[in-house]
Image (cartoon, rainbow, N blue to C red; front, top):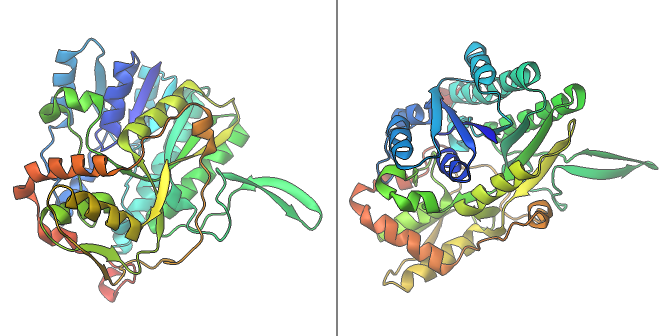
Length: 389
């Protein structure tokens, strides 16, 4: 297939590009490097250095017959986007190209507005360009489990059948997101469903959990040149990465609030497999399809305990502490999201284990001198002060 990857410089975008190129697909990457700009605003760096996209693509193309092409540009630039679509004519579009940080979106008015403008308007431009240039293309959009929030009912995959006052209908599952970033993803989903229904487009919306992991088969071929980013900070860092980094620094593992909040997780290798499964099994024209993309879920306390017990096997001794939650969220809640679609299409999940945690601990150990302990502290509170407004 001819696959256009939007946001192909990112933590998931670059490994996806290599993985699908290795499968024999023709890959075209677009990125505007906005995440790197945000990192510089907050003085954040990934744990280990990564090559520029230009360098990675050049090295990749010199080592493999499955070449990757790329353009630097912004989805907010409709003229640029149309040029790419007219030139490449993709069969499939994988859309990672959005500001991905909930804390960033809650920092102040300016960053909340940027998040929604960048994500929602960029996605709208994409829908109009698809309608104009390649209306039969399969759009695969990276969503998030955070769109749903934590309702007191089972979370279905995007849709729910409602019986009300003697009548029934199939409706989009009600959303209760927890940040302006997650709200932008909800708005995306609504706009894409509308475009599928009105313009006969097709889309798979992947509502993904928290991704963990550093390596893939392609990265392992040349880690120094092909590695992806590892963030442990309060803006882009995931909770697993922060816990592992704190353990390596022999610090307490900081759990927000009571730690009873539950989240869905999956290995980076499973992300790649899920995306591949979606590309190989497109929906029919006019269909807005939703897959909940995670392989397991646990509470923050359970996750901290797993990291601590994993560390003990290689000589680390740490404890967890519960700190004031910078977020405004339900801490004790029911949580039962469904994830049957990808499993039924052949996904064989990799489970989070002590072996996987220990592997990640040993990677972080190699770069311990790069760790900035100041970044462990939550940088942003959901309760804005006057300066934020």
